[in-house]
Image (cartoon, rainbow, N blue to C red; front, side, top):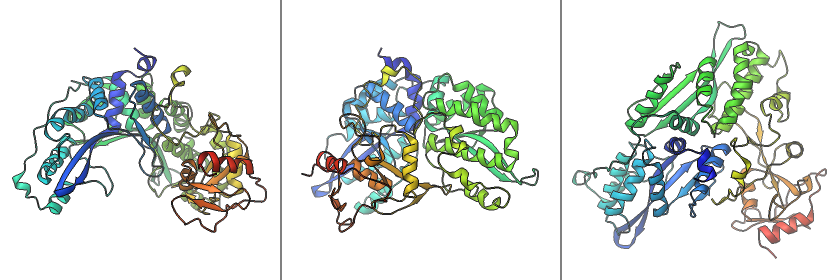
Length: 498
């Protein structure tokens, strides 16, 4: 057994992958209305750095050489496995532990291989695969215009659905009941901490707030829903459920129930461990003390809940009751706006770790010596946040390339800082403002990928794939000296421009 397996048990990993992994089928057109189909496994990170790192650690430990990490920034980020041998290896690993993904992988390595794999398929063959696929995934469909539905396919190729039946699905070697470690993996995969707010006349400030730990997973097997609900019942903790046959949706509400479920699962938790500890040590005690019954306490607690929520699953969708809303309605009574700066006391209190993100797990450091087998261009090294924040404030969060200013859901400005000469090996760039640029996420990625160059002499911009930056210069504040040596290094080593 390797060191990683000692930390990430198969039961925990199975729960985590049941929550984050889905098999997909990529259809490729060939001449004469023939098609080929290639299956792949996408493992979503749900906009969580901690989730990404733990999943990457597991995949690295399995020596999956072809694994790639696809970072969509504002889109969807996921790990991708598409080699048959690796999908088969993962199916063997999950056998007896998984309640969902094992079935999907069994379909790929048995029925799909025998019926569709490595063959030129007719339109009716593909239609049969699509309707069988939808049964396999219990109606779940990924978002996006590139997803092919059976209806769209039958319309395009003039197929009569009544003439084509779905195929019987094979039984994967799934688990026969719940375990606490499996549920902890499921919890770490899909749980999101947030605050629920309602207007009321029952409290003096006119609003009440309570914490929620919410789990939601759609298009899953009935056995996964049953096992997860059975576990919730076994804990004796009060919970709410909107689950249906193929949709698991559970929420733990009120501080006492959120505390109980966190304390129960914490010994097995890895992805959410530090976020859960912050809930236990900082956020829930303030709910218990009634801090949120005053306007200042309410506002600060809301900001902290959003801070944790963003790191367990990405920014919330637009909500009416956000910090900007309360800044506006309570602005005459006390100043809240200054608390919105990134280095406020509130931020310092909720972020006890002197880095940009949480460490992903509490395990022995040697486990991380060799992480990185999966491919990603987004290997951004931790840096001194005060220098970064100072530079962002200098430019008022405006991108130095395009001048764009982005807003988060709560109304705060958002920008990213790029190191012209990357930090860490093999570049070892300096962590100084002269080696930094303030950019929007799109142009940050462009710089990382080496498709934008900057003239050290004139600061003129050039993009490899578009003329949109022609005749445009990098915007530079008079208080920001940019190293010409760093720009030359970027052009020569990152862009490859002599």
